Length: 178
Image (cartoon, rainbow, N blue to C red; front, side, top):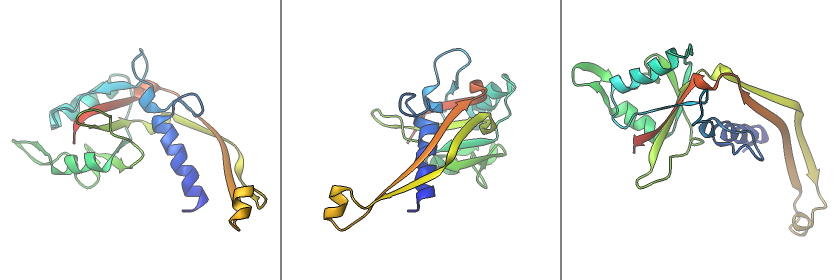
């Protein structure tokens, strides 16, 4: 893997699951208080339940431009009919209701028995990412473990932070059966 990809994956992980201590508080951790990321329900996958998510965002003047979820959830969306009376599947051509769906292993399932799939929909233009400096790459040929193995230790550092301008512009679903 190249360094930029590794740093990008770490940024994505923090954006979604950050603990707010050693990394920014991720979107998944921002639920529960008024004005925070909204929660939704897709325990019953149907077009009607998706429309409820779209309505929740519209009621706070948010225009969703993306959906992020895991590959297992994408498989469910691609194989679930909108309804018995409507043609087509919930996800077609990489979209749900005209909104692009991004698939990543960075969004973890919600632990439980059984695990439940997560889906995050919202206006990702509301996420602000600040970066100070450039990507720093430091080679240390004298680190003892690396030196003993005849290798060179390389450290890659990026100083970044993230903030969400309008948290209610997102809705988090954590109850999709896998």
